[in-house]
Image (cartoon, rainbow, N blue to C red):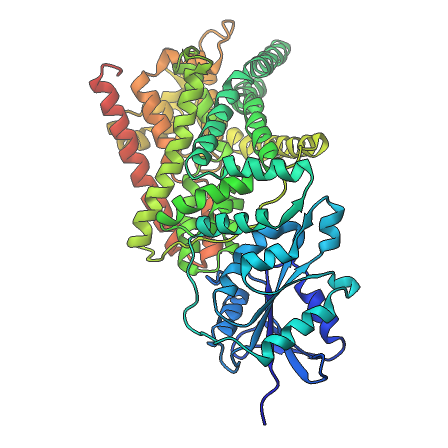
Length: 616
């Protein structure tokens, strides 16, 4: 007795695959798990036009035959006849979303190349027409070489035609080829899918045509990376150019308020705590709020327009060459805000070695906490002048620092994937959202949330650390002719640290700032501000922190400090989340050690190179 024919229902997530499966099988379904894996197995029976039964299995949604999750691995194994306890399907029913055809055809092309008897269900054609897209199913059928049926699964449209075409294929099946499956380069596969989808379009709205034309430029192998680099360059130029007025106003307001409170309070410990601790420390950090908001303004706009996912697509090939999974892009992008959510976002990476590599390089991405340090040093030592048409030198230096972090992360990933964490990166499929204008309200809410996070951080971690540092730097009190930073407890601790970092050009002020900076990056700025305020002899002649730095540091020391912060071991929160995500102390200790070595070598090389050019 011949077994009941088996038809596998496959497609991308959100293609309406399960809705079509349910419409074809009705209540004749059973649910269980595939042998050996906790992945649901949906099987049902339907009737062919001649009344004979056929068995349908609803495969988990997938983006390709190169699995990145247990669900996708099951789909691949069933289709290739490698799933334990499962027989090779006699035919294949591929479900694609008509309104997202070019993206869904990437997987469909891989499935068709398997050589199984195949029918394509062009699903949700009603929604596509509603959005102004009309497709020619006959032209699509000619391009793909397999039957294509228009369906609306939720309204049970096209079901009879699907079963008729499946019946015809099962009566006269093609030769079935089972093996390793086709292998396609993602970019070539995307172009092939896009060409076929364009050929099948009868008419579409101008918005859809503009989307295709924009993608033709923004995703171009040569133009795409150049455009991405240009956008990032403009973003970092804007951090300085646009923030100058609000940052100066905020700094002036902070200094004026501190001076007013200082004049109203009598000399003593309380006055010193408020002026030298809170205003000189926390105030020195708060003035960088405009730069941080401008940076996140760009990020929010790029996300809401749909460009950020395309940036991930552009970076995918480069990252795979660096030994990183394509799925690492989003965690690394998140690390520009903070390494903590970036490391937590690596949970989407299924390969343990790829995930560990991403965790270990995520702290090299320049988080927003570094921005106050960068902008302080750049404002103090880099002239605010143009080096070309509309290109500011300060913005150029900031761009170079961010670029250094990105390049360092990629180089570190290459080394780690070949040594400590041997694993290979792989390409991945992703949905490309429609382009849209950013909603002003959503962007405003995003900026407000980011401002609250920054101010909350300033009012908790930074405030607490600054008060502790003020206490250590204030006692014991300096005598006549002595500097407070020399005799205080903090000064003596800094003396010990200075013996280690003096060879790379760091002065005692930096030595004092390094230890509290482990609590939060921005505390380095607060620490320096507090120490300089305590050491100030003439409080009537108020200077900005930039002015004080410029008078006490050499350019070589400043450049070495910037190089240190590109690599410097991360804050305590990052170390803690790394320990939690890796279930032990081995990799957090490895992370801190290799970052400290890189920071020390980079700062030393920068300092001695600058000294050799007479900048010391």
